[in-house]
Amino acid sequence: MKKTASGYRLIFGYLGLFIAFVGIALLLPLFGLIDPLIRPEASDWYCFVIPSAGAIIGGSLMFGFLIAGKEKAQLGKHQDSILLVLIWLCAIFISAVPFLLQKDMNLSFTDAMFETTSCYATVGLSIFKDFIYESHRLFVIYRSVLCFLGGIGLVLIITSAISDRYGLKLYLAEGHNDKLMPNLARSARVILALYSGFMLFGYILYMLCGMSSYDAFVHSISAFATAGFSSRPEGIIAFASSKSYWAIQVVSIILMLFGSLNFLLAMFLITGRFKKVFKDCEVRFFGILCLIFIPLFFLTAVLARSTSGYASSVGNTFVESSFTYLSAITTTGFSNVADLKTLGQGTLLLVTLMNIIGGGMGSTSGGVKQYRFVLAFKSFYWNTREAGSSANKIYPHFVYRCGKDKEVHPDEIANSFGFILLYVTILFVGGLLVSIFNGGGEGFSNFGDSLFEFGNALACTGLSIGVSMQSTVAAKWTLIAGMFAGRLEILAIYFAVFRMIRDLFRKETY
Image (tube, rainbow, N blue to C red; front, side, top):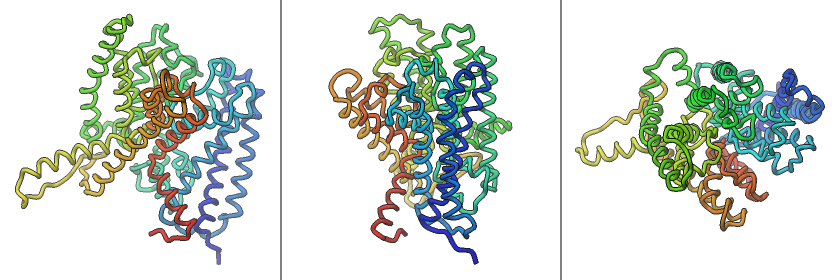
């Protein structure tokens, strides 16, 4: 009779499997050496092979000794959250090692962890110096690979390769709210195929816009993963002198919008089921936001530039402000403005608000997610309607979500309000801590700028005004914590800590 693996033995056994997967993933950037532009950096192979070998061997041993060949029990309540948090922490730590092994880049442990967390969380904030983009392109490719893995989700990729009857809880805990197929593994494979297909689509379009293969690869991943990283230190504005710059911006917008959609809606869109897409509550909410906030972004930018004397045409200001809005609401972080502050302090406030709202539930975007705000506004409407009607009259509470009418339970509304409150609280506390750790006072370290930067970290958005680059070690770790919490949507971390504390004191978790 087989022995049964359960509890923390099961958690660390599964963790070993994921660590081995991360080790394999560390070798993927080496395929970039096929490109003649990257080939001169072949001497950096050891930066990836050494940690890869360690992760594959160590992870395989953990899996083999702890759970291989054993009957696997079901993970206990919130143990899936413990495993999820450990998977992401180990992935970030292991993936930071190549940055540390490359001595010319001269990254500290804090900087390596910051860059790696930003990649996996698809944030887009970076501490890369300009020379890294010129002489260490292999690491820019590496950063894009991490964005790809983080955007689609580490659990989803493993789930697409192996099926486990207990994997659904872990799959859902990572933020994949809708299964596209009845079978979990097949659903994960479809999402992986969609994700990869959109990357290829973006790559081809960017190439047609005149980008090199290297530039197109980096930007296609960043745009659809809503990561905001670029192959150039200036971002996509580096291509402003190109005749096809307008097309580059259009392609970026298309990919950002697709990336901010729930994967099921994206599948409806590419299979021609447009009615299901445009009837969806999130899509309609997004349309309303566009009608309200694009004019607001534009008006704010026009007033700011007219006051400051910044020379820019009305048409150019409209393009820049609209692009900034779309980059913020999709939590991508691409910018077609050299300095965001030229759009005015009002724009920075609006960007922070868009970061809070975020993209669609179950997408690569960050933020609170639009569906939670839909429920909040719907709840207000329902309560107002019912307050003025007969007590004997019962109203149904439905929203159209992912192709069908869905009845909304009061607990779901309460959870949405609770999450919004928790998110805003963490946002202000994190912004305050960044300001304090950076010394407070004037310049980049004042509270407004710190709140903006931490808001981008928490929402997994890469729009920056330079606070990250100039931050102290303590402020950077605060931003790292914000990025990590934002990617795992906070609650998974709370449940993991809650369960571990109860286990430490040997208390039953019901």
